[in-house]
Each structure stands twice: as structure tokens, then as C-alpha cells.
Length: 110
Length: 113
Image (cartoon, rainbow over all chains, first blue to last red):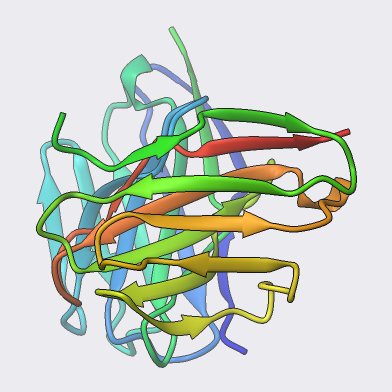
């Protein structure tokens, strides 16, 4: 079945440093979604990418969808302590099930 | 509160007991999803409803698990004869249509002793 893999599993940065997490799918995705889960919280939708090569920005966050629609990345510029959490990518399997990666847990020290 | 709500938030039970969780989606959302999340993992899809019809079930959903959405509004997830391996966070999510944002509820954390 389809698999969605994320690297790294953990990342620790100093406040102000940049952070990137990468997501790779074993199959072509119709679209990809990114979620953030704070410690003790539930996943919160960040963005959806649909088009091949698409790039979207949300303030300090930049999301990219690969040309082959099999990979994606999330880049955070100048991290802040509020960025702490686990970032998940998720892609649709044939049908309606969203398949989540295992996530990248970001910790930020000030 | 117009978000997705789940009850109870926490459930501790003994192995072999049955448990039932409830999810109330955002009112106009006709699509409802159940996921299970264990520590260090992403949410794993369990089942999906469009209105009252259960359209998709994961292989993870053994025959001890059953889900219903009788009137196309709230949904229940029942686990019979719980096992320690069922300990997890059970998340419910809803959305209006396929391309829309999926909103997660706060989850029900199940601990099976």
C-alpha cells in the first residue's frame, strides 16, 4: 500500500535558525496536506498543495510540492518557540483515506 | 463552540471491557473520519462516513471495532473486548467536501489496563 515517509524524525534548533522537513510518498499523490500538532494537542490543518511544483507561503512557512507530486517540503524561516510541535504531511490514498507520515518533531531553544 | 467535539476525553478501562466513544462533527460537514494515533506516530485512518453511509474501512479496523453514524450527524466508535494494544488516542475529523479543510477533534485517549 501507499506509504508516506518523513525526515527527519526529530529536529532541534536554536531560535532564529531555519528548519526544513521533507515528505516522500511511494506513489503519486493527488494532493498533499500539512498539519501541525502541538504537544498534547490534536492535528491542525496548515495547508493543502494540489499542483505539480506548487509553492505556497504562510508568513515564515514555505510549502513546496514536487514536480512529480511524490514529495513535499515545509521550510520555516527564523524559527520561534511558538513553532514547537510535530509537523505531519498527509496524502490521499486511492479513495478517501488520508495517509499520514510519522511526523517531524521540532524543538526550539531560546 | 463550532468545532469538532469528542467525548469522553479520557477513558481508562480493563482488558476485556467494551468502550464507546462519541464524535460530534461540525454541523454542516457530511464527511466524518475516525483515526487512531499512538505515541510517535501519525494518525492512522480507521473509517470514513459520508452522511450516514460508512464508505471505507481500514484493515486496522478489526471485527472488534464498529462505527456508526445513524442520522448522518454524530458518530460512535465502539471497541469490544478491549486489548492493551487498543490503547491510543482516537481522533475524529470532519469536513464539508473532498477538497476542503479537515478539522480534527481533541481526541479520546484510551488506556486499557
